[in-house]
Length: 116
Image (cartoon, rainbow, N blue to C red; front, side):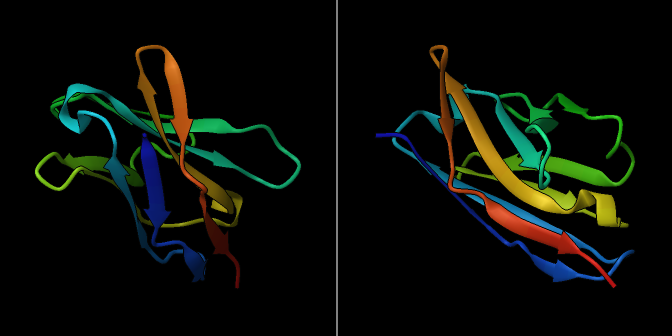
């Protein structure tokens, strides 16, 4: 079955960086786009970044453009989210997503807290 396992979250100060990882299994990872979402307390889940199956195309939400970078290593079945210049408003639970044959799969999420 499809499994997505996020890691790399934590507590950081504003301006610092974090790198999230999502290890995928149970499907042909390199054939599908991957996404990172986040959900802040009391808010709806929002799309942060998308990467195409081979990693050639990426898209970002307006709030993270220029600060976050999504990448993937298809030899390791892993997608990454490099987050730089973190702000308090980046606080939330970050989820990895795979949409395989119109079915959405989610990881358990990893908590990111940006606070001084």
